[in-house]
Image 1: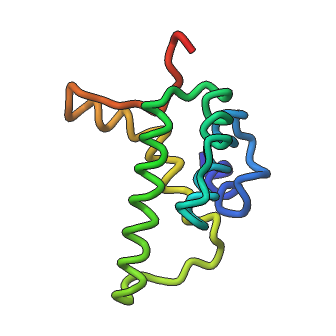
Image 2: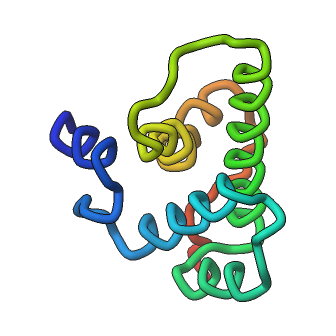
Length: 119
């Protein structure tokens, strides 16, 4: 896991990720640069990678929330400067991939970014 985190910090595009994770992170990077840049083509790529609409919504909400909270922190001068922009992707990737486990522990209602079984 340490090697994966180190590779993700350096450049997620070189990490040994599934195609689904890579498509998700490409979308997240695009959203982090400019939220309005998302297009129907991006959503089609996510669907082709196996994400259902609920998963696309969850990915979008998590990425937008991190973008928002980082802008608030920046405006208030909170935190430290990030040396490499790819470091900012780690919380999003971990939230989408592993957050479902923690949500399930606390709630019976879960919206998952995992692909639907029927997809």
